[in-house]
Amino acid sequence: MSTTTAARSGPAVRVRGASRRFAGTAALDDVTLDVPRDRVCGLLGRNGAGKTTLLSLLAGHDRPDAGTVEVLGEQPFENPRAAGTSLLVRDDQRYPDDFHLAHVLRVGPLFHPAWDAALAAEVVERFRIPAKPPVKKFSRGQRSALGVLLGLAARAPVTILDEPTLGLDATARAHFRELLVREMSEHPRTVVLSTHLVDEMEGALDRVLVLDRGRLVLDADVDEARERAHVVLGPAEAVERATAGSRTLASRRVGGFAEVVLEGPATAAATRSAGAAGLQVRPAGLQELVAALGAGDPPSPEAAVTAPAPSATTVSGASR
Image 1: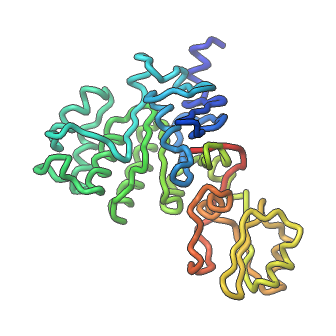
Image 2 (image 1 turned 180 degrees about the horizontal axis):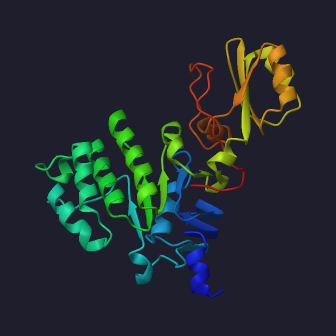
Image 3 (image 1 turned 120 degrees about the vertical axis):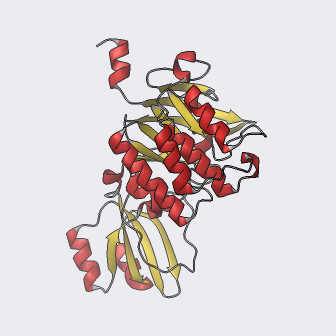
């Protein structure tokens, strides 16, 4: 198979041993991963985990100190051949001071040959993006809506979105998820997006990558991830007895009750035994698994001991 054919048939993103340091601190540490073509990949992790650094490498805005990054078979940094294949919309995307919505709509097609004006108009209408004020006067949510417009209407082969729902209200976030799912069905491309709203976005994701302190700690298809952990909860002493000797990823105690996240799916025997002891057993939600691996925002101690929707991912080794 030729190199060109391999590049066209291989993953959209290939990262091998990538590291990036800033002032002696590792933002990324020996990260290796693949992102399949025409999938939506969620990049998850706490602030400072290395997500923005990785997105910048994928977009060619920066280069690793060690290792390699390839997007559609090309190294993206300072590479004219790769310039038109990807689009990064940052959470703090900058625009010229005198830019209005009309300028964005006029300039977008000049840089992105697959630009869809009808889709752009739909996003303007759905998200109620204002035409009169300059973009610099937009609210946080309005700037995010403009980023959604750019990211979706450009239809770049590799679309990279950094916190695309930041500041959006619940209705606007639902519009984004609906449009993303529709676009992937009608106009497939590779989408990599970072988000802290794990539970909300889970249904739109095909694959998840989790970074923690610069290292990749989770890498899996969402369906596979859902089998990676389960939760046991109930009276604290009964939970401790039932989970003794199991591989515990995380635990917390609220008054006389405890909740423990255990590695792997719950066996039928363990579920029956726990039920006989008055305990609840359920699959771990993706947010719970991310938090258990040290890469998410842990639930507050006051939070009710109930479960989010199931979802999980593979344990590997990565960072943001």
